[in-house]
Every structure is written in C-alpha cells, then in structure tokens.
Image (cartoon, rainbow, N blue to C red; front, side):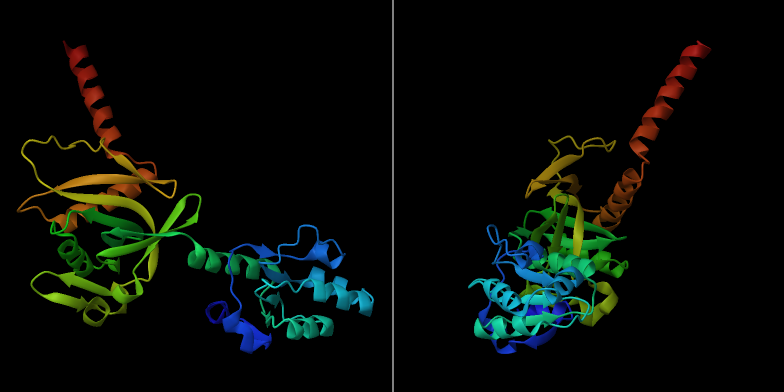
Length: 306
C-alpha cells in the first residue's frame, strides 16, 4: 500500500499505521455511487473505493444517521482503502468508520478520471501475471526488441554493441514480462539485474555507470522478437523478408524474426536494421512488396519487348 501512495502521489488523510496491514488483490477500482444510495447487493468490497465529486456531493445531501450507516457498511473486512479525489473534504462519518475498521483514507489532487486511470495502470503492472523469459530486452529507436536465442549465441555481446550505438538496455539474461492490456506486453528487468549486463570473460558490468543514464530504461512495450540461432549449412534461411513468424504469450501475438549468427556478421547492425525495417512495415512501407512489384514490372516489360 505504501508503494501505491508513493507512486501515485497520494496523501494519507488517516489510518497511515494500517497501510502495511491492508492488501490490494485486484486492479479494478470501485466508484461506490449505488452503495451511497443503499444498494449493496453486488458491492465489490475488495476493491479500492474511489470517491469523486459525485459521491462526495451526494453524501452531503444525506441525513447524518444515514450517512454514518452507509459509510460503516462500506467498510468491508477486505476493503484496502478509501480514496478521495480533487482534495475534496472527507465526510466525518467516513473518517470515523475508517478508524473503527482500521481502513486508511487517502486523498489526491487529481481529477477522478485521471486518478482512476493512473491507479489502474499502476495496479495492472503490479498485479498482472508475470513470466520470466531468457533473453535481452532493448529499446531500439523507440521499439522494444526482445533478443532471444540459445545460451552463448551472443545476445549480451550484441546488446553491448547496441548500447554503444546509442540504444538503451532494459534487461539482460532474464526479462520479466506482463500483460498491460489485450494487445500490449511490457518487459522489465528483475530487481537484482537492473541495469546490469553479463559479458563472458569480463563479468558483470553496470551499464548505467559506464555509459550514463541515457543508456538504460526501466521498462518498455515489446514490439518484436529477434531470435538468434547458430548458422547451419543444412538450413534454408529467409532472404526476402517474407518468413516472419508469430510468437504468442499471454494470448498476445508478437512478430518473430529468426536471424542466423555467423562469424563476420555484425549482429548489432543487423538487429538495428531489422528494427527499422519492422517500423517501416508498421507504417505501411514493405520493402519485400516493393521488390516483388519491381520484379513484376520487369517481367511485364520484357514480355512486351518480345
């Protein structure tokens, strides 16, 4: 609860000693408008109870005894806290009920809509199911690129070269991934590995200390996966850019590009180019399609000349 207060710039109005004993189990927020009228059949008591201008102004019109009864009834055993937006005045009956049931009351200067959105984003990031993936996550030209591959294929060394080229590291070795919404996956580093990079033969290096604060980032949306694999003479590799695959995680499909690793290939430049090419495709420009169009025009032209 204290982390919620700090991250969302909330002010503890009362019950600060109870912050560590109350737990938030869901990212959903409740606006107890119906409950203020006395309807408690489907009251989600386990949610943060957010009171805005509508709830507070309605409470002023209630009789004192009724207001006290409603406020007390809203204090469920699993209710994490009450939160009042816009620094609106807290009804004395709510303050007294909160003290009786050891429920903190918080306040914010933000409007109810903005506060609700901020709370939801924060809670979804903290409470969402997480999955740890072996790889390196980089921010390349604003795109979250997850670099995967077998151990020893050169992921961290490639990341180091990308950092030297001005791109930013999010996570090395282990990437913690969670779902932000139906179409978005977010990746970040485990706390113990934050800003650290492991290079075989060198050891652990602190990227932010060596390259500056601009070389790292806390988290990013994952846009594309680049999988590095050792070059095999027996395998046919995509040469036209039409062999893009999909990788599914938490029900979200991410494009996956397989890149063979071979001595003499500059993997950092190749991955950088792959990221730029992916962005171009996302903006509607497909170099493969352009090549096919040029080829078709050439075939048509030669046919006419014959």
